Length: 285
Image (cartoon, rainbow, N blue to C red; front, side, top):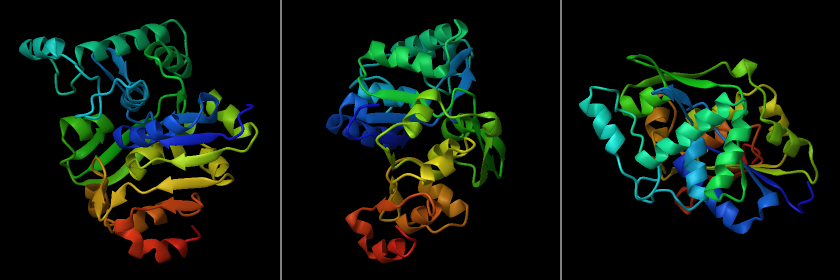
């Protein structure tokens, strides 16, 4: 790596993708590596669905739907409408153009490409200039334990609409995962990278990445800056605030900082939470 500066951004979906887009606007392609959470990935309708990878690709390509934040702008839904009419599982909405991404990913994976290689092919075809990689080429599945049983992330997030109270989160197969090759190269390369943890859900989007064996320890040896997804006691996006309350945690930027204690050296908060700066600083950030 010959870039004068190198930034590794760890991101979930919509919230993280917005910061990744801002970083991409300021950094040359060789200066930014975006690492996507793949704990949300699942098999659906015979397709490999990678929601966070796709949101990042569509956002950095300038193709994302600005209203929804996910999926493609100008999308149509004929396939889902027909599927529902046939009595099929239409709870996870796949747009007609979005289906092409999943079909092509499946074809590339069946041809023997790794998820990293397939993602690079798709991103290039979409016009993305900055590198986007999965946290690992091995499958890791986020499981959400709730009062109504255990759900995969998409079942909890989309089908159940985040309604069941959360009691815990687990990452199936994380012990067998290894960091994606490009991520390993960036961690070992020069100059030393700075790591930015985007304002994604710490428990559902960032912890799956940190669950890849050895990765948290390797990142902790680098300068790590985390951005709070909680502003004024509310989540920027998604169920983070609701989850925190259900897990018995204070819904605050300070509590997120506590979650990243020992990993992040700096923590970015909104001015609305300026009164928490002293307590965050006392954590060593």
